[in-house]
Amino acid sequence: MHRIKGVTLIEAIMIITIVGIISIGLANFIRQTIDIWRFIDFHNDVSFEGKKALDWIIRDLKKIKDTRSINTAESEHINFESSEDEDENGIQDIIDINFDSNQHIINRSIDGGTTIYPLCRDVENLTFTYYDSLGNIIPTPVARNRLDDIRKIRVEITLQRGKESVNFFSVVIPRNLYR
Image (cartoon, rainbow, N blue to C red; front, side, top):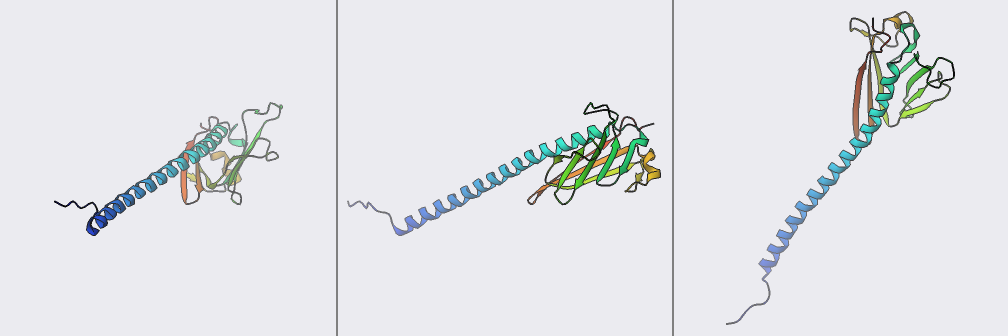
């Protein structure tokens, strides 16, 4: 009996086809795994920055001294007198939070705008929405005679890197404004 030690052309084509199908499936699996990893990494990184910025803003807004201490209330900017002296210089702090749309940065200052500290980068949008005691939205920019009506502030931040974006929002009731 004669043994054949080679493979036929059909067997070779079958092996190449099976290996090709397995390789394509494995490549798709690896690509999807890398995409998921990048997505999760992006969200973790951006979430940390966004939450940190939102926490700073909320903390500051809770320290609004009283209804008469709000100097400016616009959709992307708020300026107010704080109930605390953060830098302990004996002068009441004027906190200024604004969105620089050209540089995509949220800026904060505690001395009325002289020394600016960036809170967050890659910001697509920062929006302040102001509410009166009945829960009605006060149109922005808030007119000088309506600044005393502010009782609640909604803060929304949208961060974007590349094609991905993440939204953060919170509603703040400053402790010294609610009557």
